Structures are given as structure tokens and as C-alpha cells.
Amino acid sequence: MKLNIGTVRSDYAGFNSIARVAEQSHGAFSDSVEVDFSSCDFFEANMAAPLYVVVARLRDELNDVSLINLKPDLDTILRKNHFLTKFQKTALIDTNQTTVPFKVFKLQAGEQFFEYLESYMYGKGIPAMSAVLTKRFQQSLFEIFQNAAIHSRSISGIFTCGQFFPQKHRLDFTIADAGVGIRDNIRQYTGNTKMSSCAAIKWALTEGNTTKTGNQPGGLGLKLLKDFIRMNEGKLQIISRSGYYEFSATGDNCKKLDHDFPGTCVNIEINTQDTNSYYLKSELSSNDIF
Amino acid sequence: MNDQVSIRVADLIGGPLGISAEDGQKVFEKVLPLLKKSRPVNISFDHVDMVISLFLNVAIGQLYGSFSEDEVKALVRVEGLSGDDMELLKHVVDNAKKYYSNPKGYDAAWQEEASEDEQ
Image (cartoon, rainbow over the protein chains, first blue to last red):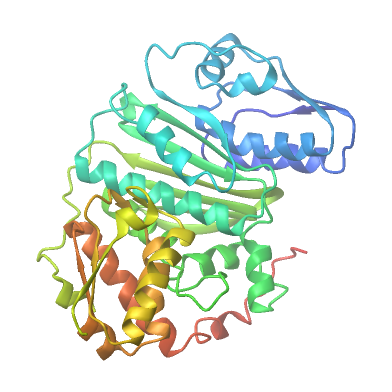
């Protein structure tokens, strides 16, 4: 089976393209699946994370997955970010140091994820961001990672990847899982078996909403992430099953994908030149909190 | 016997990262019996470099499921969090108060959200 992937950027068309490959290969078992890049003019390296959702699902069904006809530039960048090591190719040294390598984490590997961020994210060509921005960014990534760990039920783990675009002063970081999707969790939790993917994403973004059981409050992670992105003038994309949600300075909207993406992917793009302080105007004391 | 008890979070969770629900639960389970005995508790975040809402929800937000706002206010203190983490904790506490005042209320409005030809 040969599947054409086309050009993939971190946008609606790019995610749709990956979801199409997933849909076309759905049901394949113990087959040979070739993802053909001959008509791919550009592939944003952070999109390796959602692509691996499709690969992991196929490999889980004992398919032999290969990537074919990669153009030399693309081959180089996907070796630099270690993605092609998952396809038995050697990694290349990232001399420009603009990649945060592709990595697969087990669901419980929050602390290893921290070490990974510490090792690759800072001071390596990725620009020196203010200490507060760095911390808020890290917290945001943890909120996403732990959301995936708790809710996804992904048997193949969590896939992460990042790419710095120096000319645009933008850093994209993508966290994906091959899990059940936001929609299925919320359908189960609310009992509304007809809730669409977009409605489910909006539900998850509403402050206080959580499907976590055990009589504990929650549902702040994605809301906080959105607040941070608003202030940073960055961009947030959440793709889960048939839903494509995007939030940026120009507003937010959710569109239905033409194809079913078999998991969830969160991409955050931050403005690395941001100098906001992110502090409250007045310091809070313990008395103000409770 | 009303001496304040200090809980050092970094010691309890074995490191500087307050990022998991399990570690949040460890803190909660130390605070809970002390508050039941009306012992004042000081939760120290010294040497904790990173906290996220998930951890704070479980460690501290969850207290509002067992105690009134007045009881928590009278007995719990926190120290060692940076200004922005105090802001995060305030968010968590406000959310917890709302949650325990009407835990199922959030869901009702979403029953009518229909699918756009998804299965």
C-alpha cells in the first residue's frame, strides 16, 4: 500500500493530510505501508509528532511502515530531529540547533520529559527567552503532557517534537498521542454520545471541565495554556479525531477535518521575542489565596 | 496540641517537580489528617522548581471537598511559591471552591451539543 502525503505545515491542510493517510491505511494488518513524500514540497519538522501517531497505529497492527521519496532537504531535517531513527536511519548533528528532537515517552514519564526539555530546549540556538517566559512555556508543556498521560489511554505513548523558526521568531512544540481522542472521553463522561469533536474540544477548554474521576477538581490546564498563548501572541492548535481547533491573536475557531485523526495533537507556537512579565500587579500572600 | 506542622513538599515528593497527580495525592494525604485534628499546617514549596495545576488541584484544591472555606483559610498556609505560582494556586483554589459548590453543574449545559455527522 502506497500513500501520498503531500506538503505538511502546522495548519489545517497539514493536519488534514496526515489524517487522510491515517484514514486510507485504517484497517491495514500485517501489510507493507509506504508513505510517499514525492509530492511533499515542505514538511515542518514538528509535524513528525502527529505523523508518528499514524505510524504507531500501523505498527501496532504489525504493518511494516516506511517513508519513501524524501527530498534531500527533508531527509536532512528529519535526521537532525532524530525522527528518521525510528525508520533505521542514522541521526545527523543539528549544527544550526533549531530542532528539539522527536521523542517517544511512556505515559508515566513526566520526569524524563522534564529532563528532555532541560537538555534540548534552552541555550542551543533556541533563543534565550526571558526566565519567566521559559517557565510559563515549560509549565504549559507539562500541562499538555500530563493531559495526554491521564486522558489519552495511548498504548504507544506520547510523541513530542519541536522546531524553531529563527526568521519568524517562533518556536513550535508539538505533543501528540495515539489515544482515544478528547471526543470519546467526553462522550463517555457526559453521556452525550453524539457530541462532535469540535464541541468536545470546546468542552475541554472550558474552565473547570474535566473528565477526571475521583471527585477532584480540575480542568484548568488547557484554559491556562490559552491564557498564556493570548498574552504571548502565539498560537495554539488542538487536533483530536475530526476536530481542528486554532486559537491566536486573531481569535479562535474550530473546523471539522475531512478525515479522522486517530488521536490527539496539541501544537503550541510561541513568540520567542515576548518580554511580558506574566506577573500579577500585586503580590499575593497566603491569606489572599484561601 | 495546636502547634503548626510544616510539610516540606520537596522532601515528600522526592524532588523539585510538582507535576503529577500521584505526588499531589501524597501531599493531600499528609494534610488531610492534620486538618481533621484542627492542626494548622504550613505547606512549604521551598526547593520546588515547577508546579502545574494538576498537582495543585490534587494537593490543595481537593481539601475543599473535605473542609469548609473558613476551615482551610484558618488552618492552611503556603510558602515558598513564586509570584506567578501563587497566581496559579489562586486560580486552582477558586476553581476548587466552585467545583465543590456544584460538582455536576458544569456538565448539564453540554447535553445538547450534537454531532456534525460524526459517529
